[in-house]
Every structure is written in structure tokens, then in C-alpha cells.
Image (cartoon, rainbow, N blue to C red; front, top):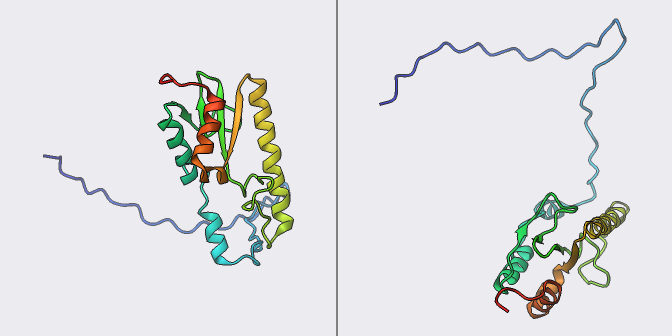
Length: 177
């Protein structure tokens, strides 16, 4: 049986803190939180909701790719943070890494899903270009470390046979082969 609870007196609620007035001896004024203007005023709530729902890992396409690789007999680690760019699939013994890139977020050349949004193109064009530059930088750093990399595009998952062939060529035989 648990010991009986003690009823300790509660502290009275504290008054709201007074705003800081600034230091009169040095003339400094404390930093205040500034209300930022709405930068997304021209974007509909539906689009905002869609963009907020995009996750960075464990997405449906990523689960599909992992399922394909696993069904072929390959064993891997997910999202190894010690490697540049945190690859989606890491085959440590083979020193190979695979990224699954979303066609929109990583600007897949020639893909119908890699479009520039009609609203705020001045924001999206540099952002998507920065993503491509960052991807190339991470792949180069992995190459310098002796790793081979493969990029699988989200649209390629529509043809699982083709993806399996690419995985087989990149990773080589499994223990089952």
C-alpha cells in the first residue's frame, strides 16, 4: 500500500513579471520579442497545411524503398547521423549509402513532379537550388570518405522492378545469391 500523501501548502501564485526597464547606468535596453509580419499572406491555408505535413524521414516512399531492399535480402541501417547528409539507407559493410530524394524538394531534372510553385517563386527558386547544392556537397564528402552513393528519385518507385535492378547493380550480390 502506498504511503499516505502529505498535504503541503501550495505557494501562492506569483505575480506577472514586470517588463524590464533597461539599465540607466549603461544605457542598454533589453531585447524585446518583435512581432513579425505574415510572410505567407499570399498562400492559402490548404497549401500551408500540406507543406506542414511533409515529414523528413519515414515517409511512405522511404518505407517502400526499404521494403524493396529488405525483400531482396539486403540489410541496412536507417538515417545514420554520423555520415554527411544523413543518408536514408546505409550499408556499412559495403560502404554504400542511398538517398531517396523527393522530386519536388530536390529538383529532379526533367520530372513532371519537380515544378516551381506559382506563389512565392522568389522564395522557392533559391531554396530548391540550395537543396541541390547541399546534396552535391554531401555526396562529395561521402566520396572523400570512401563511400559510394546512389540517389533514388521518388518518381522511380512507380516501377519497382526498375528500382530493384538499380539496387542490385549498386549493391552487388546478397548472401542469398
